[in-house]
Length: 236
Image (cartoon, rainbow, N blue to C red; front, side, top):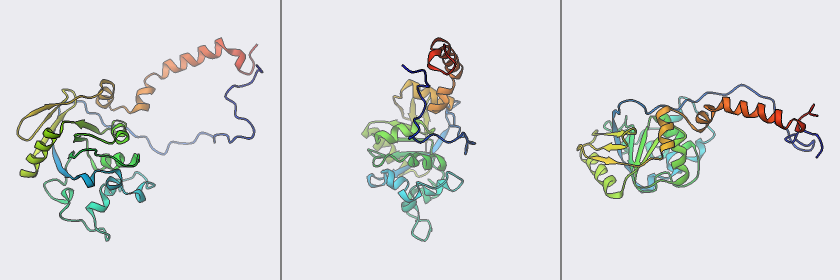
């Protein structure tokens, strides 16, 4: 084997540009601490649960700035002139400040756009309770500080019924105890992957978790260069 840099790029291939400044630093909110009761929004109907309804495609290239929350359910919340539709739940006083969504089956189905979770988080949604989720959306939630909770159909239906009958009622989602407490005080346990649970409690996304091992990476790199120095310029 010739003594070259194994990861060098051939002349005909495009090289990466030089390092630049980060556009922004995103920190995932922690779920640690006493659980707080949160007003819940109960009425995401089956036709409202797809990612194209959560954030229409025309907003996907928008900057994640202070306006990003306004794209949530944009075509359901607003008319073409930008005025609020008074019959949509998040435009009603009882649910305008909702931090939990209690949804129907397969919430987050459709395209894999991560912007669907970005806009939910920007609005302030911390947890979504549903009988099932779109697979990619489910994974994206954990990477962006939103807790998806799976409960069976009957329990979700009961929660939705209670929220509809008492607009503005509150639900508690306790990640540490893995319990959802409904407006009637009934407790519902839920399962969550231990690793993902720990990351949410610490406010870490996948990259933040990986960076906890930065010293180990540096030690490995130094040892690798030392033990396989023939792969690098200047090796013997």
